[in-house]
Length: 231
Image 1 (spheres, rainbow, N blue to C red):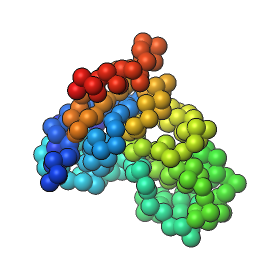
Image 2: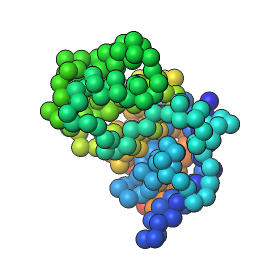
Image 3: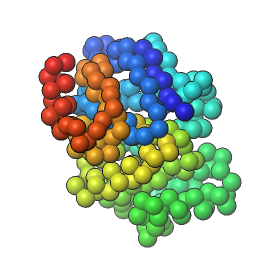
Image 4: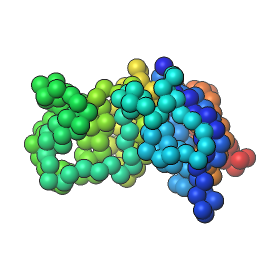
């Protein structure tokens, strides 16, 4: 299983966007590094089939990003995902499960399992508008897993979290990458240093670096700065 991105391009009037980006991601943690405005969100929205590219293609094996097969295997967490603040965590999860076509009994079981996984079992019947930022992000991780996706696209999932919450997220994401393709974007280098199998660096919409990563080989922050400066 692999997701192949070929010459992906999206040009905005201000000159920003993504410019002829190509790479292939396989199961594991694929970290996408770049400063705010580097084009990470534009790239990930095209990979999630939400944004139409000007040029280029995205395929999971032989299936296009715009096919139902691709969508059924995809879990996408935008940086600011939408939710219904008056819903409880349980109701929100069950609602999304119904949209994904899960049978009610299976959805109930999956909801309880996932909320326990992200540490929200005690808040299962609490309304979302009472959640902290960290709790809301945990709910975001839970909801993206409701259909057991094989491809996870996570856009800045640790942004705005305190150090303890970020550490928890890294643990969950590392666990999820054992049998899934995970593309995890961030501008926080330390979030990837110990968990990434592979690192991609984006600057001004252009891919500067794409390679396997070994945390014991080099300091990622130093490597990132060097690559961006050279780019």
